[in-house]
Amino acid sequence: MKPMILSIALLTITPALLCAAQTSAAQTSPTPGNISPQAMQVILNSLFREARTMHHADLTPQQRAHVEAVHARVNDLERAGAKALHEGDFAAAEADFRESVSITPAPNTYYELAEALTGQGRVAEAIAAYRGGIYGPPYTVAIQNDIAVHGQFNPNARTCPGGGAEASWMKYALLLSQTDQGAEAIAIYKKALPQVPDANHPGMGLSLDSDTPSPETFQAAAHIALGLCVTFSGAGHDQAMSEFDVARRLRPDLPLTNYYFGYGWKQLDLKGVARQAYAAQAKAAFQQAAAFGEGDVKKAAEEALKGFK
Image (cartoon, rainbow, N blue to C red; front, top):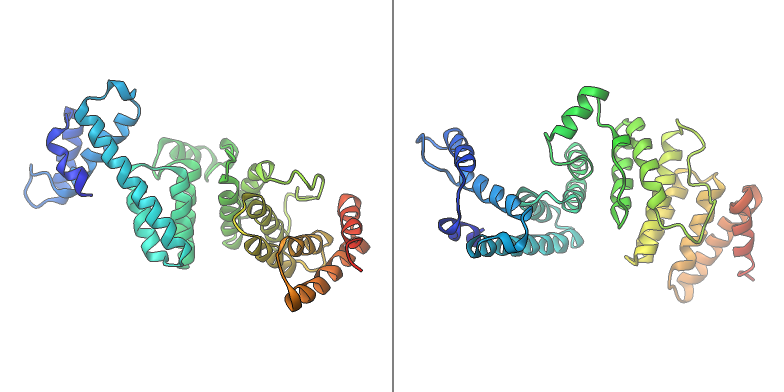
C-alpha cells in the first residue's frame, strides 16, 4: 500500500474524515489523538470512495493521482488474487481479495473472496462473503433492514445482474443448501436462473417443480446451471463436465441429469481410448434420458442418440 501512504500529505482531509480517523485512532492506538495506521487507512479508503462518486474533471491533480494509485493497487490485487485462486493457493487469494474489498467493495471481489474461503473449507465465512457481494458490504443499512423486516436476508429484494454473477449466485445457493438454509437457497436459485445462458436448451426443466425440493434434487439442478454457466463462458468444458457429473451422481435417476451428462461429454475434445470410454457412458445416459424423460428432455436425448452408431 506504499503509493497510498506516500500520497497522504497531498490530500485534502475533511473534518468528518478526520473525526472518523481520530475515533479509530483512539480505539487502535495507545496514545489518544495520534492517527494510527488503521485510522490512516480509514482516511485513505474514505477519500477513494468519495472521489469515485465525483466527476473526474472535478478532482484536484493530487486527488486524481491518489485515486489512480489506489486503482492501480486494486488491479494488482485482483490479478494476484485471481492467479492464486487458479493455482489453488486459497490463503494467498484470500489475503489479496480481503485487501481489495477493504478499498473498494466490488461484488465480484466478494465472490472471489468467497471462493477462496470455500477452498479452505471455511463455509460460514464464504457465505458471509457471498452476502457481501449480493446484499452489500457487511453491516450496511440494506442488510439491517432485511434482518429487521424479514428476520433474515431477503433475496427477493435483490436482482441478479447477470454478466457472470449468476454463476456466483448458484455457488452461494449451493452453500446455503449444504448448510440447511434451503429457503434462501431456493430464492437465490430462482433469481439467478433467468440469467443462466441456456439459449440452446429452451424448456429443459431447470425451473424447480416444487418450492421444497429435496436437497439432492436442488443441488443437482444448481450444478447443471453452473455447468451451463461454465460452458457458455468459455472457461473450459472439462470444468463444465465436472458440474454435470456431480449432478448425475446426486440424482442418477433423473432424465435431466442423464441428458446433461451426455451433453457435457459431447463438448469435450477427447481422443482415442478416452473418447471411446466416455462415448459409452454418454450413450447410456442419453438412452436413460430418452426412455424416462418427457417433453424437450426426451426430444433432445433422442436427437443426441442419432449421433451414435
